[in-house]
Amino acid sequence: FAALAVAGRGGRLGLLLLQTLAVCWPAWSAVRLWRNGKRRAALTLALSAAARRFCSRWWQYLTIPLFAGAVGWLTNKVAVDMIFYPVEFGGLRLRTYPNQPLGWIGWQGIVPAKAGEMAARITDLVTNKLVDVEVVFRRLSPGKLASLLAPGVDRIAEDIVADIAPAGAAQGAVGAGKAVLRGLDPAQQAELLALRHRFVAGLTRDMQANVRQLVDFDEIVVGGMVREKQLLIDLFQRCGKAELAFLVNSGFSFGCALGVVQMLIWLLYERAWTLAVGGAVVGYLTNWLALKLIFEPVEPTRFGPWVVQGLFLKRQHEVSEEFAEAMTEKLLSSESIWDSVLHGSGGPKFAALLRARTSEFMSGAAAVVYSGSDPTAFGGAAHWRGLEERASERILQLLPRELPLAHGYIDGALDLKDTLKTNLRRLSPREFEGLLHPIFQQDELTLLLVGTALGLGVGYVQAVLDARSKRDDPNYDERGRRVEIDVDADSAVSEGADGDGEAPGPAS
Image (cartoon, rainbow, N blue to C red; front, side):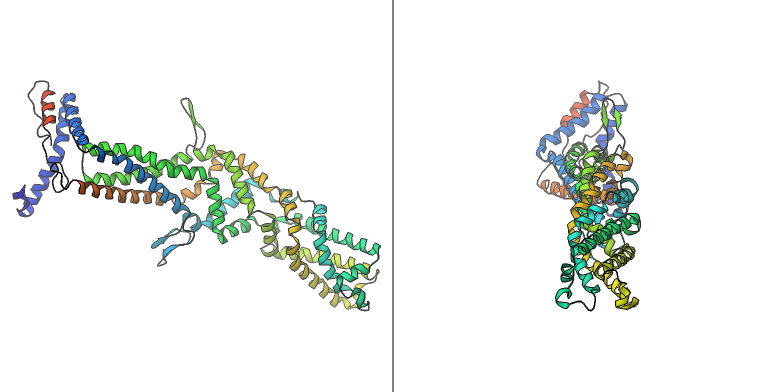
């Protein structure tokens, strides 16, 4: 071997050939014995060599399944974290791609990177299968809402009445809206109260009739989740908490099971590169197996006495409640819906409805304050239209301040939480799968490759540590390969040859 090592290129090729022969000869001998019918001898040859190796370094061999379990847990944990974090791109923004988590140098969580796309899919599910907006908003009682907002409307009305007070009224009595109202007789005050009630009730009915133009769930849900990505992250983490925990924790058990196979291979074929390759295989398979068990089979499937279904799909009843709670806490609450109506795409339509109702209210209020006189006689038609515009703007400005009086009632009357929960439970398993599976489907290959890369790295470290432990072991050469002759194995082969005298060749 030494002469071949210094004999130039031809010598190196010869050395490589001899090393390959030394590695393959025991396996080839065992196969030859097996084919010749000497199965006992073949098994003895292979198992005796493996047993000798295990007994000489058993504590190191037993670390292989433990390392594999650690690799499985680590790769799955990192994969789960990479689904959600970092919320914003972390790394150097040399180049990033829209709706893609991976940049040239850096990463953004899959969910926040694709927040708009994923939120749109959730909105499609909500609006097409779970909630009929018109039916839900018909649950509001215009009269009840008018009664709840009465104190706030009174405060707004005081400002409006102050604007339309007669110019010749005594300023000490009616110089402010509140004084004007207090200066009216009880019959006039009762008429104004009825007008305010009709104003709110009529506006509520107008909103119910035009709800699809006023309330845009796409805007509320998608816009809210894109602006505050943590909402989408929290939604998925709450709905998939059991599955995400299983994905992480199963990595250890799957990794240990695969590590036993890896250890057996290492016993029969002790080469450092098998540890690195085995780590990569463990990293890939633990992620793949966990994902398959979470979502497959979609429909309940019978295997003998057992009925098997994906873990997430078996929790449809529980997940439906979590989803409904998460969606209605902030996104589909009365507060967020009103914010969309006042400041979103439905704002112009709402302002038009409000102006019409304000004009009706002011005409009635003027008739009360002016005792039936034509209000335009005191300031002209142009002046009156200006008052109506200012009153509408004033109501839009003051209304958000008074809406908290009605948020509790609106949330209870719309009952979106129970509606979402009930209808989500009625979905077929195939439809329900689309609630959580997209976060894994979007970049499933990326997650698997990350697991493979991490497993490869940990396996390489394990191989390096193993090589260092063999440096002072006389049974291994400088490249970490066993060099001693396995006499026991040769003897066993001779005894198992059934007396035909055939020798398989060197056993190591």
